[in-house]
Image (cartoon, rainbow, N blue to C red; front, side, top):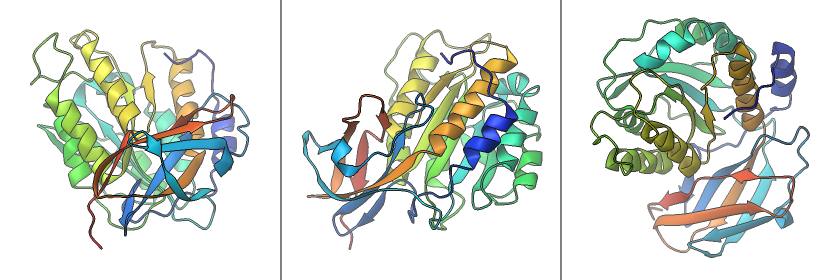
Length: 304
């Protein structure tokens, strides 16, 4: 659970200045070409001034074997901006109502190159509220849109967004900030294994999406299961998990600050892939003060 420290608008604005650029991936987190894969690796929040991570500071494995690193670099200002979509379920709306101004300030303070959009979950689909746009004022207004009640499975909605991403323009990274209680009405109560969660994770990985899952508990939330599923989605896609179990504004402000801190510390890792198909990947730091987040698997279709 997020620590109880307040992140002010000043902190957010200052941190945003650090994120001058992002990784230019044509299809998001993973780019496939001639046996190579590009992966966005993020320094996890926790170190106020994270040191520069060099190639010699990381250990990378594909299917538990040492990987052939083609390139490793910090993203820079010459790269295209990221693409970010907030994905809300209807049950999170009452929690968000009083906190949307904080999200709006976050959106408006993003780098001008960042394209941002808002989507809501409706009957297993992700429905965009307006375009994915660099007009941050327009997106900030979209945060106030009324969300319909029927959500369905949040994992159906995540898969739908992964398969129908609303832009094919080059991007540094493609990010989903998913707010939900994680409950899947199509999974048996008390059963942790959920094939729909697994499918959503694979769809996100295949489309190169990084998912930051935000657990917003509700009175009818599935005990434990929903939270665990949300954790798994974030971990497997190279994102972060946040639990908003406390109603205090400080907790939400903390989440907003930590989210931006994560988005501002990204590296591009290019690997030589020996064969097409799914490859399990592990990226670890040799630096004791630095923890890294990366997708658990990448997919290369082998097409030239």
